[in-house]
Image 1 (cartoon, rainbow, N blue to C red):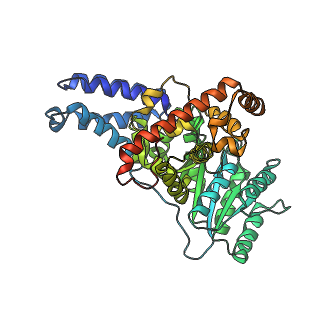
Image 2 (spheres, rainbow, N blue to C red; image 1 turned 180 degrees about the vertical axis):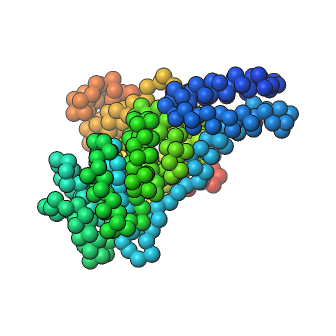
Image 3 (spheres, rainbow, N blue to C red; image 1 turned 30 degrees about the vertical axis):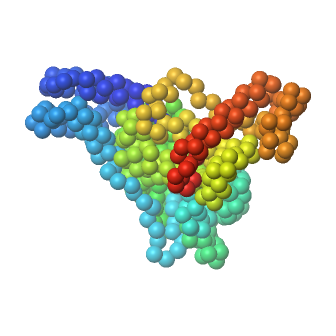
Length: 441
């Protein structure tokens, strides 16, 4: 997400930080590079023009030019203006006073709307709600079936009918939600290949009949300015409440995220960052601004860790570490928790300073798969006592896991190094109070 834009902005801001003294000339040169980076990221040209002008006005002020660290002041100005551009603060979903809260999803076909419907339901369930999905796309082949499969996998009910009347389906779903005690109803409406008049009228009828508390426009983040153009047209007809950007884990240049808020004056509420049911992030402008400028996003990283890590298991592991009883079974359990947090590259990019170091360095999530396969091919005794794994056992484990003996050897060496590190830490830091859940890796 935003890799190219981040790299270009980092290079520009690093250059200006290197100047001992700021002048209007070197500020103008830097702003020219910032303008070019934003345009290449497919940000709307009017948005770029206004953004650069606001930064210029603040950057040439007396306070910045006389600052002890003028370069850092410029970085702060760019950071603050990015936050302003994307909406200042987190915009929550409005909940109804009397359930169910109706959330209506709208957007072009292929934008990831049906997948997002399931992700949103899963997200809200984790927040203590009881969602129901509504299959209101009566046009796309297999759309209803897709939503039913997603709902079944998540154990979330899906309301569907064999009907050609989307408005009636949605009205009947409200009644079903009340009968089943469901407090959130998510309407997956039909996606449009383009702004189709008949189908837009259908959306207007659903809005008029159900009066949803929240209408979200689902925009494909990879389409850049096309997503912004579609958002403007949907806004005129539906007056939606917020935007969701999908496919932000791909090679999106970021233009939609930086343009859509300014063009529509509607907040971005969520980012969809993968295919898994939990690949959804609430949108925080300040956090994304930090990521774009290569500053990481520690807060989101901590939140992901809190969701993935079992506190009780962490305490048990801490006791094992103190007694030097850490085994391959414990190592395997830790891998499972790390995997729940998302792709490794995405996790590492949230750590300040890591993004630059990872540039052009391949981060292979498949390495996790190989490690899991090797450990799964071991007997319980071998996992608990890896020192008994001799040559013949290594060959058997390699054959069973579809890997090479060298891969098995490498894992065992790395595990032994980890055990040695734990011993060294125990002699030092473990003698005092160890923070609960602290891990040595």
